[in-house]
Structures are given as structure tokens and as C-alpha cells.
Image 1 (tube, rainbow, N blue to C red):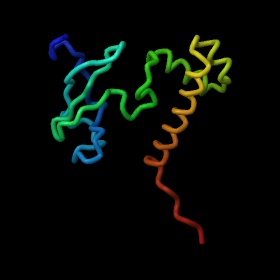
Image 2: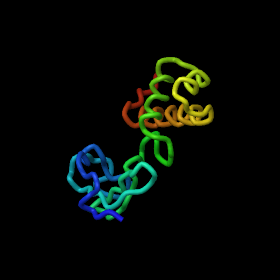
Image 3: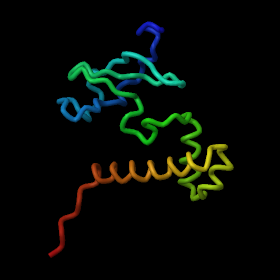
Image 4: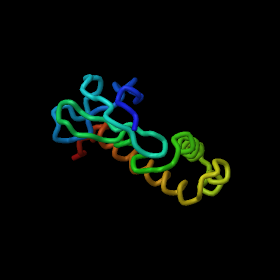
Length: 127
């Protein structure tokens, strides 16, 4: 087991607390986060909020949450899909399984919809 001092702790300002009950939920750059451990085959960071004491993965809130695929492969898959490549062609080009490509496509669409709903205000209804 590694000591806490060996965890990659830089650039935590891009993250925010993922606990909706925390007063710092969704607020970046407050210096309230710390790395309390690592997990997984790719050494993902386990982040702890000093305000509410909750812990969450550095991937929580992203398309890759609960996914075991390497980040570089996932980015390559999503780039191919964004360029208009089909699922089968993307699978061949990235050496990712057809199921993985389909799952990432579906998850990225759902994630984009949620982000859109949060970031873009709804227009008032026409009368």
C-alpha cells in the first residue's frame, strides 16, 4: 500500500464535491478536496471533500464513471464517433469491442443531455 504522500495530488481544482447535500457541491477551486487513496487497475484517485467528508472517484460525474476502459482508448472511441464514424468502424479503428463502443456512445449521449439541461436555460414558452 502506498502512503498518501505518493498519490498524484496535483490539479484537484478541476474537480468539485459530488455530494448534492454538501454546501460546496459543484463548486470548483475551493481547495476543499484531497486525495485519500487510489483504486483500480489504472490507479484512479479516490477524492475526499473536507467539507462534508464524502469520498468519490475522480471519474464520478463523467462518461467514464464505473468504466474499466483505459482513458486514452475511450477518448479515441469518442473522437471517432464525434467525427461521424459508425460503431463498427470505430470498433475496428480503436481495437475496442463493439459492445464497448456502443456503451460509450450511449453513455456520452446521456451525459451530454444532462450537461445540456444544466448549462442551457430553457426558453420561455410561447403563447
